[in-house]
Picture 1 (cartoon, rainbow, N blue to C red):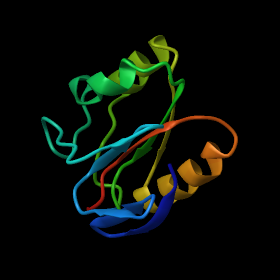
Picture 2 (cartoon, helix red, strand yellow):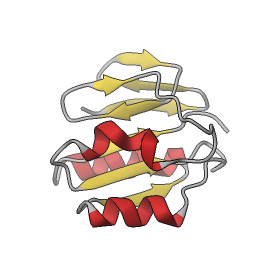
Picture 3 (cartoon, rainbow, N blue to C red):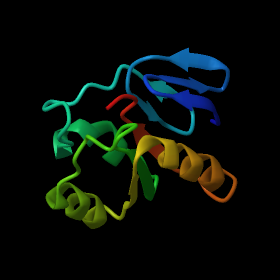
Length: 113
């Protein structure tokens, strides 16, 4: 998976465009990705992520960084052996595209705000 383009509210992954938040797995894209509390990431929002054997999650908190990632979510992922990279979505896209050439990772991206 490669992110071809990202702008506020729109992302193109492997040539296909999405206008709702996404989770990018190594073999598919899950969209729309809805969170229980919108701009507050919760453990329950990442159920499918923790079922994988991936050890890195790249989180995009939105174009302006509006989505918050509480410390309990980070600790939960750490306990599962998953490291996190948390950035505003434009930076998370860069990190994801750079990371996939080195190792497999999952990206959970909020596309607006």
